[in-house]
Length: 252
Image (tube, rainbow, N blue to C red; front, side, top):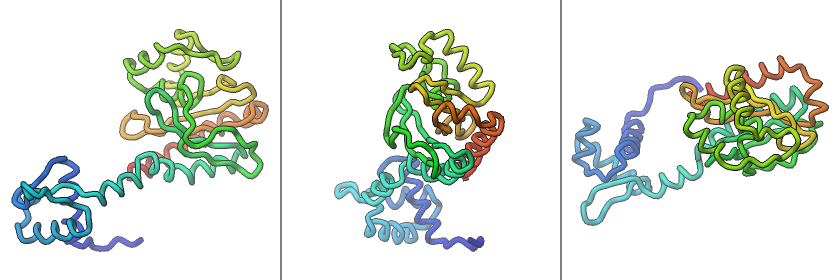
């Protein structure tokens, strides 16, 4: 879409909504006018429109305004997880098509990874993992990515809980796991070598927000006999490139 001049009234309406988002408090026409350096008559006209549309509400006693139900509805419709999943999907599908395996996208929530998107190729074996599934961090590639980049305090708290041995390859020794997590951070990727499910492995990389803040992790996952036949260096580069593209698009 070509770059055109912004409509001033729309800019000002969004400035009002963003002001409420920043202050998180009830405000009068006078207070909004002062904060945005706009005339009271201009602010009143914009507020009246936003109120009639349901994007602002008014307290009947103080006559001050705050965000209304329409904004809440938009917030629930476009959650951060939805944005990450929708942004990631295209790049994940490219990975699935290139390597003919399943690509998964997760976020971390309360010490678990939650799967928020999944892409498959026409020939990939369907994995049991469903959107919304939760798994432990210590025994998954995507989980180890999160552990490697999170604060030491948070990591220790998560790893202080009992770690179940899912398979013969599951790492439950703290020292061995900490050593692996150091390597994950140095290399920028994690490998799940049949640690959650026998016969299944995955290679995972972080998706960064600002700085080294990991906001998601993506992985190529499939049967170990097929994954290990792939060119490892090309696979790592492809996943990192995809994660970089996801990160750039999320930061736009």
